[in-house]
Length: 632
Ligand code: COA
Ligand code: AMP
Image 1 (spheres, protein in one colour):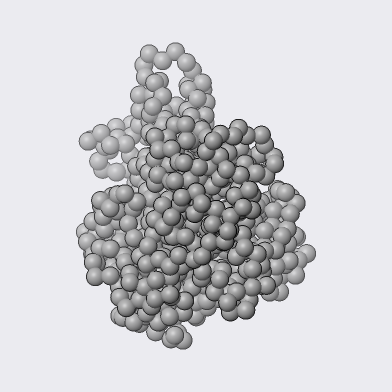
Image 2: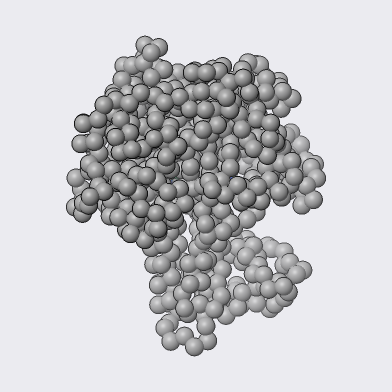
């Protein structure tokens, strides 16, 4: 491995096959791949003829190497007042028997299984049990409502769903099993079985398809590892796109394992045996890659945290966990830090803990404002590193690669392209832009290993959505620029995707739900600035002329409907009634202008606007309703 970032990055771009062959040698293969990069430039296929198994890499390999008694997982759950350490040996026992249980239900290599669970170790066991037998898991985040779960059931047609009876949020119990039943009721596809881990906090009804998780594990034999091909799908993870239908990102096995192993030491500077913590949820890509697969492949200790940065019980929780587990590197979304800072602006909690083992703090998932970065750096005195990636990439695309060569941090910048990524800023015509010119952020093909292979059941959407906008490039959907020193700055999405508390959501999907209300003539949903969550959705509604209900009643009904259809995670809490929406001459709603009016003091009125006089009306309505910058 080259010592300097510049050399390593150059080598990875000039000779991707050579670079990634060396990295693939860092993991165990049952059959070493002879094909490194698949030949089709549009398919991100790596190591297709190799044979390996993710569950083996995460568990068995370490036991064979003599590390069975090392702690693999720390389960820290302030909401249930529990802390438990799970060794690699125990993980093996749990996972292999659950895998045996899945086999007994007729689940085999290539079948799909949905996992709908809170942050408990059983969620990780479920993922690894699927991987052990070559089944493809699809984890659905608990904050999504039954309707969203049903969409995913219909799309990936799982043979079984593994769920918990319930989750525990700060002030409420979430009835996961009840949501699963509701989702199956409305879904066209009916899974054969639902395996329930009963936490004892809620009553739930049982039917013939239901199976008790503990009974299944107790009566099942440990399953052997099933070696799979390098390009075998390990999982499908749904993410928001620009339409109402979520996209099922397909991840491979060989490329993913290789990239994750590389990232642990070279980006996050974490060695085997050290503790790494990603404070996220297994329902998101961060959870897949950096709570489960990467730390375990790396033989690090990972933390399954069932709590929040604040209120469980207070803003000291992160620092307690870092001290107790000697966390070396942690990773979370800036929202979590904003929440902590609000509760503990002077960092008084931080001073109470011994954080001497703590070396790096990584942030991602949304834009990181400079104030949050400066505050955190001042409190901790260690590098605070903003880095950029997406569900599609599966691992970082821009970062300050701390394990390879740490550069000065520039606030607002996610630093440099990670090895394997040739990142370019393009103009609308696909031409590379110069320093400080803002454009579209794209990655020159080939994408490195670990990136999405395609979209589940929808290769056309994959081609159209990512590869056709700029031929020869993968288009990220983000805008940004590069400065004169080569630091990249991500300025935000250029489509209808928003990031609320680090959660990726589609305003188009919300609009579809709002538009269904019979009183609505027209509507728009835009993401506006939020001090805590980065962005929050704002609905604008124009009512039909003959409506008898009040705008308040309609707004309330719409807010409830979005919560019911998408879930509480949408944080859709504000709707304003306007007389008209700004439009172009061709009738397109000017959503960006609406966002700019809400957020900033200055904005450019597009020359294509048809009804310029509507702007004053909108400003007045925002002022009356205390929207965005008109709040105070
Ligand atoms: N299961 C069920 N419901 C969930 C949930 C889950 N796993 N996660 C969140 N929700 C619910 C919340 O209870 C809340 O419901 P409410 O409207 O009834 O109050 C709603 O979804 C919105 O949640 P959230 O946006 O997280 O807001 P919050 O006010 O509950 O918490 C923070 C605010 C800052 C503490 C929280 O957003 C946070 O910890 N953010 C960290 C970001 C993060 O981990 N991002 C992951 C990507 S790296
Ligand atoms: P997700 O797929 O949920 O991980 O969301 C990915 C999107 O979050 C990206 O396309 C960006 O818009 C945004 N994002 C992630 N990390 C950053 C970052 N460090 N800076 C700015 N935006 C980010």
